Length: 391
Image 1 (spheres, rainbow, N blue to C red):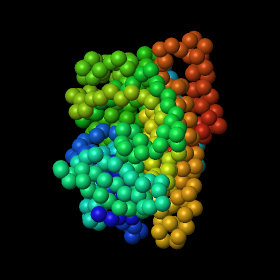
Image 2 (image 1 turned 135 degrees about the vertical axis):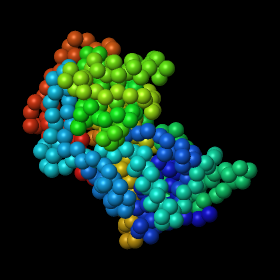
Image 3 (image 1 turned 30 degrees about the vertical axis):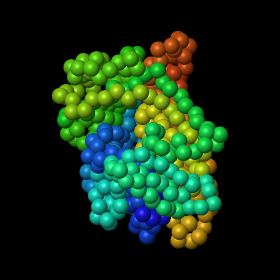
Image 4 (image 1 turned 120 degrees about the horizontal axis):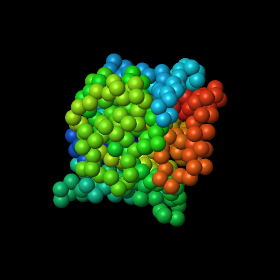
């Protein structure tokens, strides 16, 4: 098999790049370890920044997002029961975000690849990357039953997540990794209930952080900060709803509509960055290169900025013979990655309860939050980062 760009990873990042390149006449083959049903069964983020929404439209995948997604011009922060509204549109210069589930984004992208006849191969095993930094073009192999399939290509894009083979193909003496692990996780549930509030609520409370989010007007997503030692089995639905009420302002808690969870999981919080994001003819994108805590809704959106830079770099390469974008991909992507890391770290540090925090640390948390939410400069910082920094 031969293609121009071999993309490893069938999540939204890989699918989006494949779709964008296809529309510009650039051939791709996409390999995914799991089945399509498995990929579509993953529950993920649901807040899309302005730039991501624009990329979906450019990829001709934005119709359902625009019809069913909800435009949010603000979100709210509760500090031990006292609510402050962050007006995104006012403080970002007119931008907003779209609340639309990642599962739906992925479904729209799969439908678009099907419509164009894109090559997406599922259930691949033993994926290996070869000749990535050699004088000959690279190739990728995978196993299909007893057969080893080879794909010759010009470039390999690793959009295969933290545990995929792409990042591991970079030599250890080249790769540098940076990591911060937080001493808690998020217990999340999805329920067929009306959202408790028209806007997202980030709640700082002495009992721990909470988040009220949504997927639609009949599908809600809620989170609680929990110790890393907790398991899903430790939390009945009733216990979750009871604890959530305690962490919300009384007026909001009184309106909370409860029901059986249709999905429940615990995700540990961590920050991670790998450098460089290019080695030879291999380019990393999304979780293969960086992970952020979900507090600032930057994970999927930062992956989208990687795709933006890669897409334009490859279009320039193939259509204009200009390699500037590809040559500077890693430094350009990482510059934005580290800004999103800082924002996610800042919100996580301010809004959560840390088990070893001293009274001094707690006072600093309060002062940081008061400044961010109590001044035009602070609100501008939050709003500009939340709607998405320019690509």
